[in-house]
Length: 367
Image 1 (cartoon, rainbow, N blue to C red):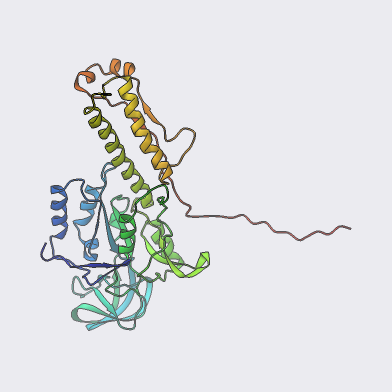
Image 2: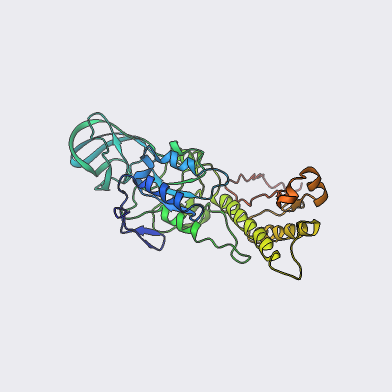
């Protein structure tokens, strides 16, 4: 739409744009996807959409197991605090829980609906001063910011991110996660790694307390942290690289990859089998064997590319024999229908929590 924000990608930081967009954008995207089914994989969405009452339903609409579309957007952690507003300056006297950030929508008695933090003055997420978008005068009262992630709980389509309070308004940190997903190109020498703990640039670490970190992890909300625990204090990492159903994005990426490539391989075998006079593909046991082989090649690539776990029983493509299938489904043969192929695969996963048992004792010398 002509009113859409103009954005540019520089490294892993999205700059030069706006965190808001004209009303109706969600419906515009829905209409666009309806006109272009299964052509697009993911969308990077404006901050204002997280609190829009229509967005959760939009996300749920595309969350079926067979769907391959995802939305990336920022959400707020929520905050309970006391403060006052004079003009466009918010002064925060104390914070009970949570953090404030650019984009936080403030609620409280007498506060203009839609009042939003637009920048920092002296505050950096807790006490201090901030700029807001609506001019007003509010004496010191209890204020709050409602988290915007709860309404997306369990939705596979949604990948959310909590902005760090110190991120500038021009930074769009979830763009790093978004770009990493779309930049994936799995191969035998470029295997698909888990998204949790991947390096991320263009954003500040989130100064989370222990309780806040536990809260975001439990609700599958992503954020930026340092890699100091691994001896890399000057490097930032993505925590936790999941969609809102708790799956590492590598899980759904692998499922989508398998679906697309299995469909293409089988279709390719059938089309080419109808265009050769030397060895046509017929609906027979030999034809089923050839389709099974084409699918198994894809499964083997999935293992080699790091997406599927290889065991003694998986991933092996199964095929119901010609005689067994046609006996059970006598009407399918004349219609060219065969629904006897199947694959039981386990998606590769990474480590996210390690408990190491260390037992120490005094050294005992001999008598």
